[in-house]
Length: 279
Image (cartoon, rainbow, N blue to C red; front, side):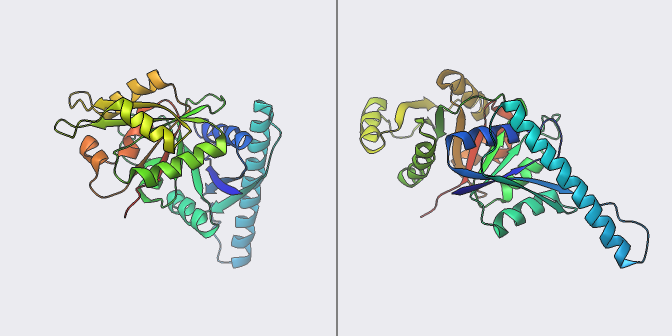
């Protein structure tokens, strides 16, 4: 059974991640672990016993709050809870705490919400952006405006580098959810011409989950986020997925920055970000 670490800071925005993860669990055999990181208030005393007692008391209070939130979210969605449990960690650095806990306990995915913050915080200082930048496992990013709906289709945006290896990963995810898959590629001027119909026929033989293939010229004056949003309106996927890493890639050329941090605020549907396949 795959394990998903679902983070929350108890804000209204972070509840979107909980709702998406719970919906996903109804369509796939996964275990959800709802995770909260808090900063403890340390009493001004030199007695270790009192400090330890205060830490435990605050941790217990945070755990009860998290358990109530998870139960309330299930009731709101009218979904019977599946395999899940709650975890609370005290740390001054939520991003590091999330990544450390995910690695230590062998999670396959991290699920987070965007905050819907202002323009400056969309670029710097977000928990989501930091986790995306450093995570070695796939991250599910859920817009704070997410409304619960069944996952019916995935849109995979690709640079065609290591396509077969990446496609095998994406199709495996689609198979677990029993959903169809669209593939999109935005090409630069001067690239070898690709025949959409021939590619569709070729890929359909290898990947029965494939529904539509979109080959679109990249428009510099428009930018990738806007083009992706436009395609999302046409394709109407329940989830957008792509691969990225920290080195200069096709996506870095489009953004001049971390693609995942930008797109997480550009799209209005959840996205699944994998670390780029190499070799």
